[in-house]
Image (tube, rainbow, N blue to C red):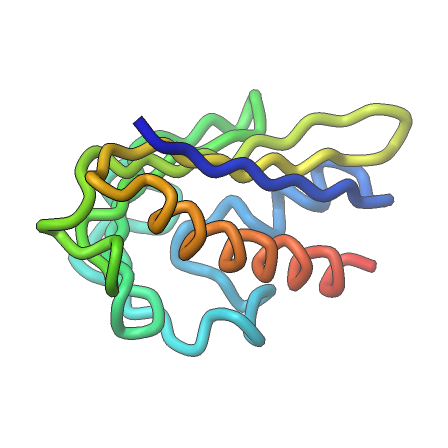
Length: 140
């Protein structure tokens, strides 16, 4: 089983960070990374089962949303290259926030099954790093 793990720390209260990222259908904070977001189906961005297509390539479904613990998880069901349906299984991403002394730690991780775990990680880690950098820029 493969995995990715990326973090950033923000000098922003956890509630402000959560408010920015908790809507699965709103990635306006990542405009330099996410070039398009298509909402699929009729679920709202705060409802389990909400679906989206990012950058005309990444098909994702919201699996859980826990505002009390500032975390959500999603599944990638199709994507480019190493994330294609026939290349990876059980891809679950998790975003978790924690707070200490008025600062917020953002952890973005994923787990998946693939015949080429390293290739998936090498593909996904730079995307997560770019998303975290965009979030930091937006909230700084």
